[in-house]
Length: 43
Length: 199
Image (cartoon, rainbow over all chains, first blue to last red; front, side, top):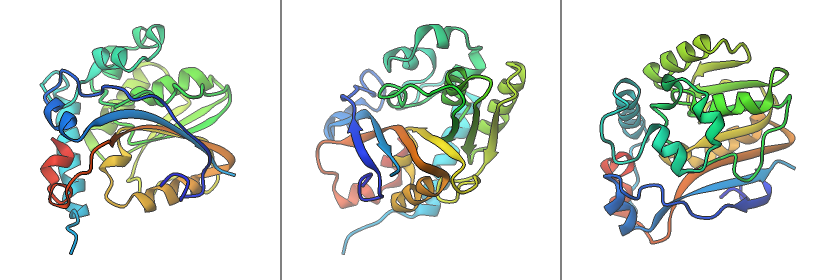
């Protein structure tokens, strides 16, 4: 979606276990949800 | 027929949830908050330690938007869904006195908290504006960088949000944000369930 929106040089950082140990962990595990850093540049 | 989420109802639920995080940051939520979360996500320890509790305690991000690129002195930054201001204050530390940061948030209690903290910290180059990500209160081409943390996933119309980011950025400007992504498909019935977006 980021590239579809016109951004270039898009990069994604490694997954972060954002919800580990929090109340939301079961849902996060169910759908393999992780946090990520994203970067893109407007041409 | 695919099920979709009611965007107005979703926005109201998000507002309600983050009002609670502003007022009662030490309650238990489905996500981590505050200084322990900042440490978990790899933020610069010295920068976080230097902040007052009010700047950090309601932080509820999902990763570190500064991990792939440091901001540069003098840059103009827009922080989408700035909450109580944590990422905006980190950004101010990076862009310095010649830079400027605009935080945008729709929750009155978060705006009151971030504005109060900025004043207490004596920061003149950060401001917090009321608004939604689908209609950013920022001039065309004003920003060198747009940041965000765990907020775009809470917007029903992501195409509109990315369009607004494009409008606000200068040519050559950066979008650097943190958000969640699922590795397993989420069924349509779950997508339509607002409780699963916010809890």
